[in-house]
Structure formats: structure tokens, C-alpha cells
Image (tube, rainbow, N blue to C red; front, side, top):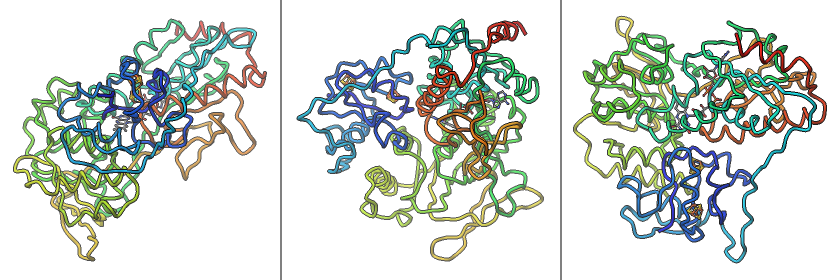
Length: 508
Ligand SMILES: Cc1cc2nc3c(=O)[nH]c(=O)nc-3n(C[C@H](O)[C@H](O)[C@H](O)COP(=O)(O)OP(=O)(O)OC[C@H]3O[C@@H](n4cnc5c(N)ncnc54)[C@H](O)[C@@H]3O)c2cc1C
Ligand code: SF4
Ligand code: SF4
């Protein structure tokens, strides 16, 4: 049985470059790459060599016969992208016939290109400062350090590196978190120094960095929540999912967060993957979390939790749910009790998009199951939050507008808002306030008068809070390519002081 990509895929495309027969799509140079929810293996072309398994940093690929029970649906999910229906494993027939990635089987596909960078065509040493140490920073450093003349200094405000791959990814998603092993490998390069507890703008200014380094890349992420613009949103008991995630992931900024889990009902506003993460953590058996990286405080709070139901609230219909298919499948087939009202679901045939259609099929399957009796997640689609009811300063429920024109009050002892992230303006750099990003041309920071010399950007603060960990690899690749091009063309001068300045920074 061919190999299969499963839930943990974070889209870094390492497997694409490892595969000898180019059967993993979309590749970074195919149009769907930026929007695909994961990558998919063409079962007819795969020759079962296993090269992709070794290349994958998060263990997302398995031989078909090695899949665990909860992963079998991924056989269909991979095959369906190539217009094939199911292959004989357990699970429903998803019955798709059109291919998202049609493959011309009469033609040998070209292998994906592998870059072999030479030494930089510049005279002297290059020192690059990177602000942040999240995935985008690590991928940028990895790309830069292939050039022997380059040294990188990373500045990270927290006491531990790697950004949201440590402080965002859920503790029970161990395989995704294992991407930090790759980042550890990158960090072992002697030409990379990571300076922890160093906030740019507080401990060192951006101007200082720009004087010290040949170039500076801002990779500070998009750390702010979008606000929920309804009455009651500032009451006690209303918390952003960001803070809650930080709390259970041991983020130092959220160690003292007041999380009250004594009520039976929690409402999560939003239907993205982060909403599913927080809902799942709230209903999971704490014993299943004990061996993960979850914070001790969160684990002990969950052990005494009174929460029995977590309602994941979607303003729009189920066909517009923001979570990805792999996350939904991971939840449902991973044994987490979930329920949804059949009357809230449109028919799968109402959408032509194969991924949305499969999501609706999975949801319909859930709706046909008996309502779980223990702690569980309930999806409530098509209900727009209107107001949070507050008693004695504390949230007690969420009033929602239903599609039938009526209002409904959902009880809630805790309300978690998960409606997206935004970047914050960086003093001294231009900012697009509408999109919450730093404006750029292929990673070169740009203001009204053109490129800001020596200043680059990557990651969420460059493209907005979208995509997976691996998406930052292609994103940072673009930024580094621009930086290298500027160096080699002489637009970015290599100063004689770069090396001395780097050594001084290293001893600070
Ligand atoms: C809750 C959550 C769960 C997620 N789960 C997954 C998942 O399961 N799988 C997946 O593929 N993707 C997941 N993602 C997406 C993934 O984490 C992001 O794509 C990725 O982390 C973005 O990388 P980044 O480097 O742009 O930003 P970040 O990861 O946010 O890194 C930015 C870094 O910059 C530092 N920093 C900021 N300002 C400064 C400053 N002034 N000075 C010094 N340092 C600074 C921050 O402390 C941080 O370490 C998740 C995201 C969230 C929010
Ligand atoms: S097992 Fe080999 S042929 Fe199959 S997808 Fe992986 S690398 Fe490609
Ligand atoms: S995480 Fe990367 S290497 Fe692994 S399956 Fe996804 S794209 Fe391929």
C-alpha cells in the first residue's frame, strides 16, 4: 500500500524534494501550495521507497499499512486529491471523482529542484540580525547559514526559543511539536547565536541592530488577538484563546492567567484550528495529557475541572468552518467525543470544493452518532454572537442570533475568543494597519518612498497569520533570496565593520 500524509503535516515541502518520483503535491511551485491544508501523495505513482518518511520533520508520513486506527481516513483524503475513490481500508466511502491535482501518467514528471547554494558572491563577512526565533526566523537562519560567509544573531524576547511551535502548538500534538528537534539542529550551527530574554525595542533598539548588522530580518510574528466587538467582551471569564493557549503551554506571559474551570459550560467563539485545540484540551482526559509538555498548572486545573461541554461557535454555516480537514479528522477519529445538530448541516453536495465536501461528510457522520454523555465538544454553526451576558462582573452566557431569526442564550462559565491574530506595529518600521502586517516587496521592507535599506521581514508579520509552520519555510526562502540578491548586486553593502560588530554582539 502506498505512503500516506497524515494530520501532522505542517506543509514545509521537505518530502517533495526527497521524493524520487515527484508524487507529492502541491509542490511549492504549484498554485495551490499556499492554500492547501496539507500535502497529498498520489497513490498510483508512489513507489514506496520511504524517502519522504525520513525527510519529514514532524513524522506526518506513514506507509499505508502502518497507519493507526484513527489515521485510516487519510488514505482516502490523499487518494481523493488525485481523483481516486477509496482503497479498501475501514471508513466511509468519500466518493470523490474529480482530481484536484490531475496527473498526466503518460509523462515522467520533472523532479522538484534542489537548491545547492554556493558561497555568496561578496567580498567579506556578512552578519544578519533576526528578531524573533519562531519558525520563520529558524527557516531564514537555516537558509542563510548555507552560505559560509554568513553569521546570524537572533534576538528573542522570551526565555525559550522557537515561538509558537513551542508556545502555540497544542501539547497533545507531539508530532507537530517535534519540529523543534529540527530547529534544535539548526541552532547547533556555531555561526548562529540565539540571544534569549532580549526584546528588541526594550533591551536593544532596532537602530542599534541595524548599525551592528549587514541586514536585519524582522520575524516577530503576529501576537495580538483580534478584538471581539460585542457587549460584555471585557468581563471576567472572557479570555482570548491566545492567552489560554499560552497558559497551558507554559508561556511566561500567561503563567498567572485566571482560568476558572468550575462551570459546566464553555463557549469558544470561532471555528479555526486554534478553537479546536482549546476545545479538545478542555474535554480530554487529563491522564492523556500527563505525559505531554502541558504546564503543571494547567494539568492540575484540568484534573479538577467541572467542564462538561465546550460549544465551538461558528458565525457562519458549517460549509464555511475555518478548521482544516486534517484537524477535524484528527479530532473525530482520535476518539474525542463530538456532537453537532444534523439540522445545522447543509448537504455535502451543496459545495463543489472537495475539501469542504469531505468536511461536511465527516460532520454528518458525527451528527448521526448518539450525543456523548461525558465531557464533549459541540459544534454550533450559523450562530452569530450578539452579546456576552454578565452577572456581578462575570460572564455567564453568550446571546447568539440564529439563522431562523430567533435569539438563543448559551450558558458559559468561561468564554474563549478565537477569531484570529493580528500583527502589532513595530516602532521605526512602516505598518499596514488594515492588514496588520509590515509592507514589503518579496521580503524587502518598503515604505512610501521605496525599500528600507538593509531591512527585511518574514513570517506572520509579513504575510498575516495564515498557513502552517512549514509555510514559513517558503516564505523565509523568498525573503532570504531577496537579501542574497541585494548583497550580490551591491544594493546591500557589506561593511568592513560587520565582522567586528558581530564578535562584539556575541560577547554581550
Ligand atoms: C495557538 C496556535 C497553534 C498553532 N498550531 C499549529 C500546528 O499545530 N501546526 C502548524 O503547522 N502550525 C500551527 N500554528 C501556526 C504556526 O505556529 C505559525 O505559522 C508560526 O509559528 C509563525 O511563525 P513566526 O515565526 O512568524 O511567528 P512566531 O512563532 O510567533 O514567532 C515570533 C517570535 O518572535 C518573538 N518576538 C516578537 N517580538 C519580539 C521582539 N520585539 N524582540 C524579540 N523577540 C520578539 C516572539 O517571542 C516569538 O518567539 C499555530 C498557531 C497558533 C497561534
Ligand atoms: S514513499 Fe517514496 S515514492 Fe512514495 S511518496 Fe514517499 S518518497 Fe515518494
Ligand atoms: S510536514 Fe513537510 S515533509 Fe512532512 S508531509 Fe508535510 S510537507 Fe511533507
